[in-house]
Image 1 (cartoon, rainbow, N blue to C red):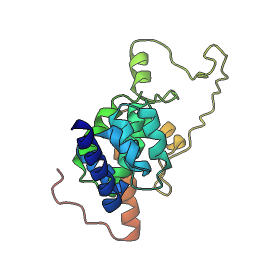
Image 2: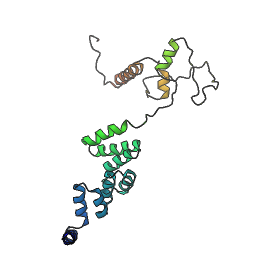
Image 3: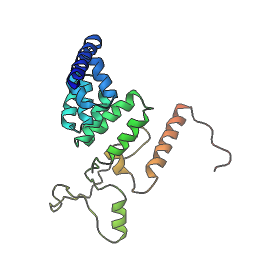
Image 4: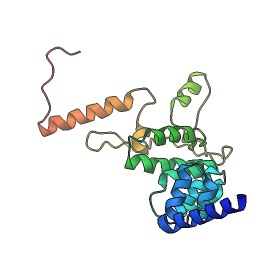
Length: 212
């Protein structure tokens, strides 16, 4: 009896495959939570990658997602995160959010993965409040080579700072060097330069009768 039932079920399965095709059965298997059956029934790279991901075979899933020309960006972001490529995973989530900024799940996943990306620490150039703090403590400060801090530096008495005027205000290294290391200096001078330019162009508002 059991053999007859098995033969009937096999014949029924063959009839269903003939009628609906393997892709349909593969998707039904996916919806039923049967990833191994998906691998047997489907040739679709995206669907097979999703099945492999569900089975915990992340590297294989990532390779399949990478082979899909489009439509697997979100899945690739997940597989990259699972394989430890966190920075690239964040970039893929950014691509998903660029296409749909309202994708809350992608945004939440991106935030989680972003915490795993080591911060990028830039090279110091001697600017900033630390120089003021050290100088106020009575310690002499001077420029140094970040690659070789012990190398001697040549200090000239000539002021090499480029003068700042209202004709060409640009926030480059020279502009930064020309400013005092005090909070708000850049903003104050930038606003003043913009105001002078408007006065010269004749488009500025008249001064307020009562200053703030």
